[in-house]
Image 1 (cartoon, rainbow, N blue to C red):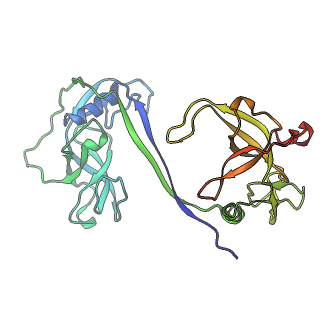
Image 2 (image 1 turned 90 degrees about the vertical axis):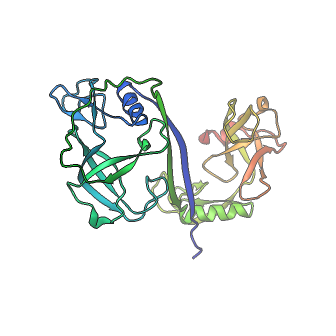
Length: 317
């Protein structure tokens, strides 16, 4: 049996969000090496601060400074740090209740002594990043320390007002994963490499689906009979794109269409070129123009045939 394809894929984008007054003060405080919490009506101090009391749902706004020292309440050892994590060597994820706070903050603990040196109740302090911009990463990590016997924390009186406060943040979001198209689409992709289009026929309703999914979406039964379709087809419907996509070297306006390949019972997507965008129409007969690298059609162009009769493709619109 032919080997099923698989490939590493990455989905990545910058996530931009604005900050309310509470989160703005918290992140600006980190930039200035100040840790702020928010006080609830019953006197609890929440760190990191939130805009609404998680118990009563009341709006919160009274900011209070807490210490950059605290106590580990629970932890887990990370043997193999991943890309983008706070440290590039084994470390502990810890929940730390900072002195003056009633809730715990999640962050990394640099523990050179390994997991045997970490325990609940361990005293730790913030290790500040050398360059700070107003983000949680301004805390580089926590580190163990031995407090002085006479050390007593007194709540600070900072009101959360700063010059040049942080108003918004950009957080990169990224997902790395391995994708396998499965048996049916592996055969489809391999056929495209030979400049052929292959679908699969349902043994029940006899419809041919392109791209194949390995099962009929209507009947729910497995499909295995391969059928070569196209390469020509009919435009069933389309749209005119007027906004240029980033990193896509195609001049606007252009047409993106649903194309029913001859012999297929499902329309697929494709770009239409070789004709003015305002002359594209339903029923237009088209054929593929393959990319220089092969593997997929770069676009579809008119064949010069008469337009298809609406009755021949109306079920695929």
